[in-house]
Amino acid sequence: MSTMERSDSGLSSPEAELGLKVEDLWDVQEPQLTPSEKLNSCFESIHVSAFPPAPSSQVIEINSDSSLAEAVQILSKHKILSAPVRNVEAPEDASWIDRYIGIVEFAGIAVWLLHQSEVAVVGQSGSEADVSMGGSFFEVLTSSEFYKNTKVGDISGSFRWAPFLALQNSDTFLTMLLLLSKYRMKSLPVVDLGEVKINNIITQAAVVHMLAECVGLHWFESWGTKQLSELGLPYMNPKQLLKVSAEEPVLQAFKLMRKKGIGGVPVVEGCGKKAIGNISIRDVQFLLSAPEIYKDYRSITAKDFLTTVRSYLQEHEKASPMLLGVITCQRHDTVKDIILKLDSNKIQRIYVINNEGHLEGVITLRDIISRLVHEPRGYFGDFFDGVVPLPQNSRV
Image (cartoon, rainbow, N blue to C red; front, side, top):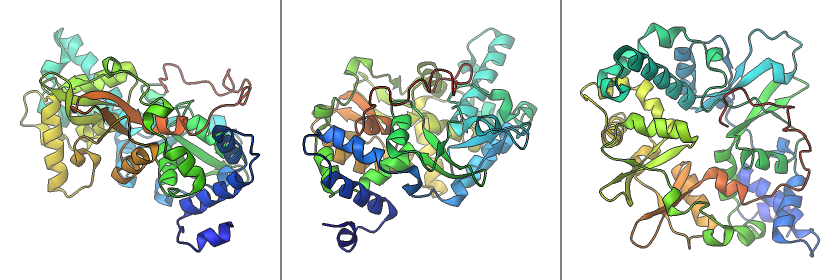
């Protein structure tokens, strides 16, 4: 069936149209190729310029001399989690790698602030900062001169700071997918060299949404109907899954994520085998964007944090994954099942449980993409051996 004929059958979104291009390429692949090799070949034949554009309101940049408070305001206003940081000191004719100093995340700003404040508290009192960081602490922090005067450029290379690694329109989907999975980039700007501007930003979530729109196509079904266990997911065993107790200070959760370089942890009660909630690194934004909701707490536990943020979101009628509770799956579920859950619920991770409801692992957006393609030997050459070095202390 041709692309035109399939378009008439009801697949009409930009992502579905893209899936049809993959389908046409899939149909003409050499029969001796394995399904994995076929997918690699298909994605190597499509240029990044074909990826659906992000809403223009989400393709923004932040100046390196913006204050942290201004950066948080910009990210909140545009409802995005990260943005490229433009080096205001770079000359007009600077190369792309010199024109931008990296990508800053909302969560990175918040965790950096908490870490700096914790150091200050410990230095003053000599005791654990968690005890001193009661509900009023966050209102004090967000009104402090420290928050208003520290520049975005000052935190370059800190937790969750990513290098500015841009794609060109002529780069391939395979390159994009490998960078978003094996090389752990969470978002990739697409630059237009002719107009010297960023004209798209592709995220892991956008790729998973594209996959969700391709359900029903032959190439997708040949891969997506495999069970998680067939693809080696989840990667970890139950003992390796990091979690926090409901009664632990919520700052412990964010400190654990920072220390281990992970994006979220389940909140558990009792024996620690069943989750009552999930705290992701992006949820740290609620400590800065709505600090007043914690003022009645002497110390904020993980359970307090979940309860308070959910009440705040319901009161202000704001949609958020925080309202969904714990989204779970089992090892016998298919990749397609997981993609549809991740996409429809707009979440970054899903927990794997057994028949008793006990936690067995976690699957992230990156895990899904990493099982879609593989890196051919020598594909990037020595590109990652110093051409685009990570900022000092970066944990990407």
